[in-house]
Image (cartoon, rainbow, N blue to C red):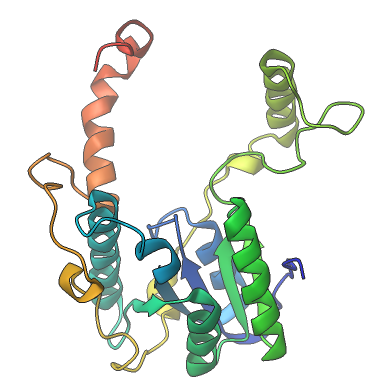
Length: 249
């Protein structure tokens, strides 16, 4: 079964937002859709054992993700009492429907993920949710145009970059900024659902996940949105010279 992309109705009481690659609370497509379509929202992240189990026990990527989630959790708890990020460690096929039922969600929203394994995972999750009478809704998040939005006149993907670039720019101009508009998450603090402490019990430590600390911090890499903002602030004064200096790390 392929995943279905349903538009949630404004009458839904609770929406569950499944964070994946999109570890932020600002300009977030799935969160924006949840805020528009439900009376309250809950956020969840699953440490997918299918992905984590084969990894070395010291992995900077996992530590970066874990610390980014800790920042999100702290931000949510500061926004509203009894709020917080739900974190699970297991198979999303089991964890997402279970969390959705536990919080009374009528819809689960997430950003598109077009990796072949991710598409199969999402289709299976959508089917499991449908069996529980819970909608599945995924949205474009990572790119300006995706999937079959930019095609040749014969309806096929471009094989040469320059014609694709021209078509991409023409589509962007025709859209008049609509495709790059910020997905506002204003009002999030007022719509955060109270979550049982047993569900939102904090982000698990690396040790609890079966991992150990890496040299991430020694490398000067700060996870989360705060780290991203620091990198942007550092890059802004140098942006004008990017063309001349991009080949020099």
